[in-house]
Length: 464
Ligand SMILES: Nc1ncnc2c1ncn2[C@@H]1O[C@H](COP(=O)(O)OP(=O)(O)O)[C@@H](O)[C@H]1O
Ligand SMILES: [Mg+2]
Image (cartoon, rainbow, N blue to C red):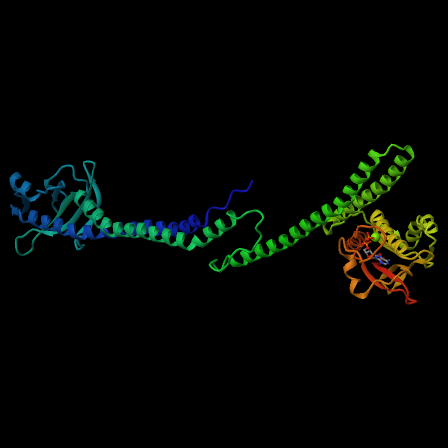
């Protein structure tokens, strides 16, 4: 299963806060580096001062420098609230003149060099070390001594951290405030989406009216428009289905109550002969009813969505139409109808679902036979029509269907007023759906001789 997408609000916030956090870390590092530089600058000067003070106590005695610094004076000089201070004075020739024995050996350094400051350690204390050549204060040709002064880092790092805090804390505060503002802003910005969600979730499943788009954000509007269009299509399908079910129920009601009435009547009969007669009537009614049910099922089966269930196979329309027509000969004879077939010599190959195509032809011939007068003529014709089509037509010489009815008779349950024959009005609806499934087109015209009707179905010829 795919992980659900994180909510937009979280995502936006993460995008905003992630880079800010990285910036803050970088900024803190830069601030710390800077702060250390400043605190060294400030405190290094003090180390230099101390070195100068110490050198003041160096005298030349017997041609050699000597350090005359009493312990008390030294302590005063090196007194500090926070940090430990160490010093050492070394003569030109390397002899130690005084100071702390724990001092590390200083690196080589030319006499002309400026005082140097660097990190070092004294008795395991990390320190800032100052190293300088300094003249002994005796006027002319003063010899130089090397002075080291070291100081532990407490003060410096406190100072540095204080500076960092001064820079970073306001930034942190700013980020927290920005987060709050952005969170609030995003929540407000996304509120229309929440409303949209409720508008959909609060809906009854029967309510397919369009969703109100007036305060929907522009980015989401195309989506809502699509959903609205889908709902309106669904709505039409629903309406259609509802109407169909209602119509079907209505159509079934009449024959079923007819059946019941006939049965009641038969039950009251004592005479066997009359009961038998009633049963025969009942049989006819039941037959009619079962035909209606079959047609309803057929309609449901041939819905436009049924395309997947089609079993298309190559078929010769010429031969198949003849075969189906032959089945109608007995019925035609019974009704004194002259049923004829006029087919071409060539096979007309189309892709068709045999059962459905049979149903289509059956319905058209059935209508033609039933709605013509006795003694009439019904002709089934097949033939080519243009380069890529072929035609199946069924003509009768019964009463012509009025022009204004020619479309409507293909609707479900629609029958012409005054039609004597019984029927459901479903036959042509089924024909039309089956034709659609075969990508065929139906036309209805008066017959060529001006009497009766010709129903023609144009099928696309099989390619190749
Ligand atoms: N060949 C025809 N000649 C005259 N009227 C026809 C013909 N075919 C169909 N109709 C009219 O169209 C109506 C609808 O036909 P159909 O859908 O097959 O339903 P049904 O045959 O069950 O009435 C028929 O009731 C009839 O009035
Ligand atoms: Mg019919």
